[in-house]
Image (tube, rainbow, N blue to C red):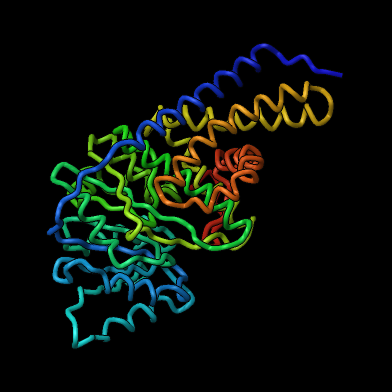
Length: 386
């Protein structure tokens, strides 16, 4: 027996779907923008917050100390954030290692425990590192990332005199079904980030590859306005900079693409996305337009899941449900094709059918729990994003 849906619900879903489609068109339009570069000569401080990263901290330090950028113009600052696995000791072991055949950049290793700073807060760790920095430009990445040799140079080259922050590109290259779906999902987030920067209204950044002028960071008060949020050291700072009128661009070259590891399991991936989604509600204050787009995306996903469920149980015309899913899938396909073209990841098209099928369902789960701010991060149970 077919169900008669309330006109108000139909109207709400239709409006949400329209906003979702318009947002994709807007993102696609912005990806056409090219960003200028210069030959960089600025002083750079690379700040990395690390917590229980003993398995990866040493190759990360080696990669950062071996950049193609002038070693006299940049420094590397590692901030241990209360690690219990020997991360701090491994990082400090590099302080006494010197290669007499080459000039190396300065390395500093700090600890939130030694400094009396708040442990378990990435923003507090980054703040400690930035306070010790001497560079005019701050670059940040994660301790478990693979950093290409031209990363610092490429990021610095995008800091033309009128640019205050640079959103860098990162991606997943691991093989496997789950890793492939995650890689495609993240690539689409990067595509949206580039498009938004191209339109002059940035909405997203990743701490795996992000940079900003120290002056701009200080002018917005650092992380003080958002320090109560466990997540969002990247995207929330980006929003503070945008609200202050700072110019933000996107940087990408294949030689400077940061590689980050895939989630260790489906559960870990879902927890990560819930943590990211926990920053959605605060966008009401920081970026109402982004909040509207995120809400429309969530409502669209809810509508698609409900429509699919009703069609499967015979309470909605299956052709109508397929048509609705098809509209979203077509828009997503356009976004996907543009993303794999820009970032040269044609291999990820293989995972698009599965991603397209599960995307609405996972958004409902991650978005719903994210709105409640319920997730676990680094062994800490978080409620309401705090």
